[in-house]
Image 1 (spheres, rainbow, N blue to C red):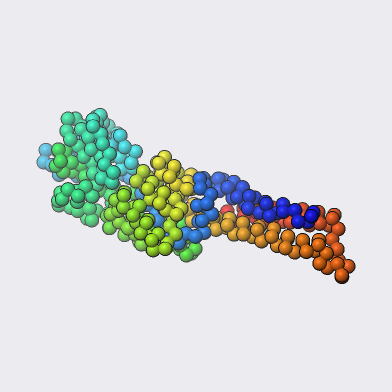
Image 2 (image 1 turned 90 degrees about the vertical axis):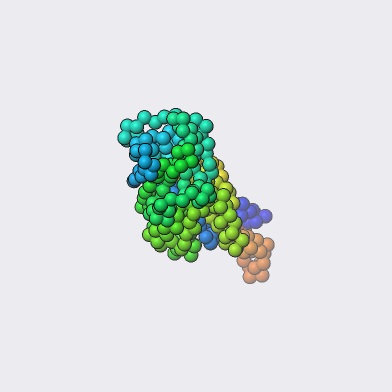
Length: 353
């Protein structure tokens, strides 16, 4: 009875859970869904949102191009900034930042409206203004001399009274640790794909630069969810990383949703795991740490169960005819020793972090 006390069996998993949660928090990983974290070992494909995840998300305005004959760059920037000041998007921040650098007085906007996956609209200075991406022009069959595919950066169009007045081009930089994260995932046998609303040219450039397995370009916000579903239907166990409002449905659909900490509250609330440091390298570390945590749980269960499988028959006297018997004192020592072994093994998880 003494030797069969299931202390070790009862502590096998909770000890690993407590230690792994503590280590994850120290590493900047906030685990909101424990099951999803432990299922990281099953991930076969990981989808990366581009802006703000693999890139820094600090879109810098590179060019202001005026297309209307009676317009000028500062006026175009002033009207766009009046609308964009109500948005938290990276592109909006880039436009407002540039306007302030040029000491442009930003006017107030009226009837502000967010168009999911398209852009923004409202009235600024008594004019109907729209700041949209190429998808809006495609949807409305509005033609331009230069298409989105001609640009190597992100392009945003400004429409005044439904006429194209000009466009802005933006550039973004890859995070320093992005390439290392992709290589770590490849070594672990996990396929990685880029998911972006940008054009084919931009998507290919980023994918090739990071040596990724592939990319999905020109993806609208509602299509992100469909792309995740399509991969799941093929039997893939999918992880999704993102940071924006548009990523929230896809994060919820993915088997493991990972939100970048610098992103929106909606993405963080939807995700299973939050990366506090917004570092792509942490994504690879998270998946490998999830595998190590699960392995420790299995090891501890075998230690604890193996102890009982061997020790209980000994205590019952299976070797009595050879004059080998365990005393209650010896049983108590072995029972305590099994608990110590399980605890030490759980602590070794720190070496995997």
